[in-house]
Image 1: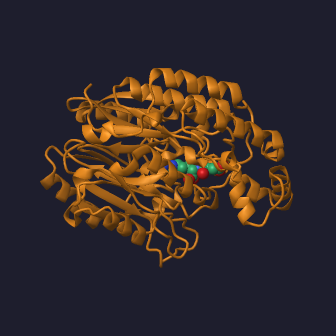
Image 2 (image 1 turned 90 degrees about the horizontal axis):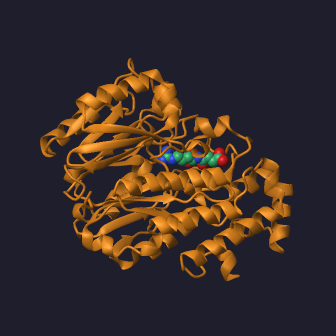
Length: 441
Ligand code: SUG
């Protein structure tokens, strides 16, 4: 397949991947709290998913894992001394804090940033805003290093903005709450920003991570045409049912837009948006999943729509779903009906169980970008995968990663050392120099 404009950057899963139960409202994270993880299997599963997409002819890139434990955060919180002492003291005083700074949550690259292609912006430049991820502490420590990586990846060919500062605690969750619909990737598109609530209207018990005001700020910063920008509110019921990000209940690729009947709060707004898209996008194809066919609860527990939908040929699409979907007969029935009624002709399953157990499906693991040939030629090749690099990354993971990690292991100083050794060898492999804090001190 010739280059269609789509490139995905997946988060390389880090050596400290664990189940710390950190995300309230994320049912899988809560259900697997304190389970033993397998970081090695997790990273290999993630790399395998990257291979699968690459083999479809779509260029595949990656983000490096963030430095964990995040000692800088602990030092800012007053823990001092040698690295070992900092870990020991933090773990003694607050095991919960230690879990937060050990999380490998940067693997879910859909939350890294919001991306707008140059074709959609007034200044004809690519715009990227790293997400502030302010709703959850373990994620709020990601934006700094994400921004650094984006700068090394894209250099001056893209406008890399600062994260939008949070308003009364509310955050920005990046591409997980953002959709783009267009006839073809490189045609002008319509961008849909999906928010949980106004930052000034907190609802007791509802963890609406994305603030309306922040979605508006990102769209303005990206110089988008208001005529081609749509804002939709998530249904509180969907959030309460475990759709903490909108990408669990809706999905878009080129002219296809799939959503659950109960995904959005306001039916009138949704209908207006759909007819606007129908009038303006050639061959626009919306698909609504009705609650009577697949309930919100089943959609969330299957992760059917947290799949990676890619274009593989002229007007043909392929959907990569988490293999857990196969346990849900209603979802399997929906797949059969889609084969007849939509451009999605191929449905494939991928094993990313380690990520799924923390609430991250195929769509969460990737940051989708769209760029033209000239822009693509300027992407830093060091962040792009090829068959040789894939083998090297797999063997580095197999060499350094543990195959089991329980909650008590976070106090093991050896884990920090292993993590540093891996990250150091990774930067050598990719010829990136010293980019981590521990390499500079
Ligand atoms: O932010 N899980 C992530 C999952 C992110 C999924 N991303 C998208 N839907 N795009 C989150 O809730 C769990 C970490 C833990 O509990 O150890 C976690 O952070």
